Length: 384
Image 1 (tube, helix red, strand yellow):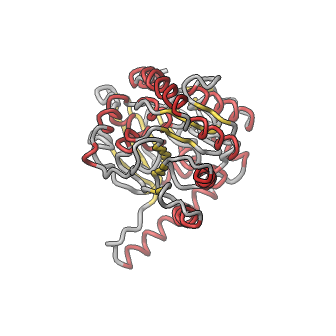
Image 2 (cartoon, helix red, strand yellow):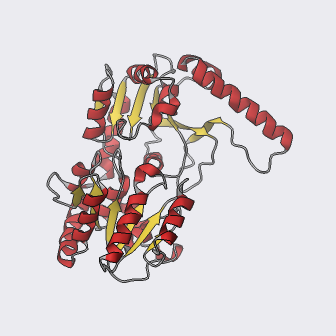
Image 3 (tube, helix red, strand yellow):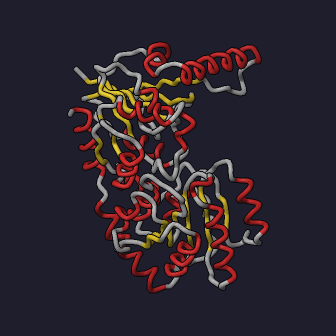
């Protein structure tokens, strides 16, 4: 008899966590398992991002434009009722009222709301939390819990906590008294799929206007990604007479602010916001340098993808980066997490000899990432 696995995530699209979930769903062993995926907010699991084998459910209804006024009011009432129960009742009661279905394994695939919901599953369910971020420098989960004790209790209601890097694990255990066992599973990466999609240039307009020093960054347009300081660094590089072009791929609440910042600094010929791309890999393939300017990460998937495509990497020091680039800048440049140090790191990478060296090292490093090893660890986690 197949084992039933339930994964709860916040949403289906939009960032690195969602790309990792898509990889897992597309390579899951459906001969052994029945997989149900819940998103906190209603969405549509479209192919090829999600396979037809998954059972999809959601918790909060989306307000769609085609709904009439009566239906929209009814949905708002339902959502407010669920939200009231979420914040004012126990996770167990939330589970009983809005999920209440038997499963063998329940996985909160992202910290925050999903974690508190999975904490309410029955004790005869194996409950797993999956932690993708540095909770010290990016404590966004505060909005999902009533207080720190509530969050700590949710983690201690789990049977296992998966951390995506050593730093994420260390910070979790430093911030909270964790009685639950923890383990590290690096994000699974589908190397062959990335290479295949990267070569589909006909699907994506080619935005770079220069032939060298093409820089790219991929991520949500939110403060934690550090794009404001990256744009300020671009201004300094222009003043220093460096020839380069920077593309930033992603969507988010800072879009208008960053667009205005680019215009105010007369950077429209050097910096472009391209928006969210279903297939970002042709852009990454066309670039020379990948930059991560984040203040905090859990394990930056885009860095791994850049290495797979043989792109030189410059990154601020966040959790997971030294595990990707080596402790001593072996496979890329990891700088201190400040604007000045990132500026110096990018300047160094713009030297042709340095760029050539780290391009070779990225190609070497990109060979170690295999999907099979990560998926095997996930199956062991489910079966253990």
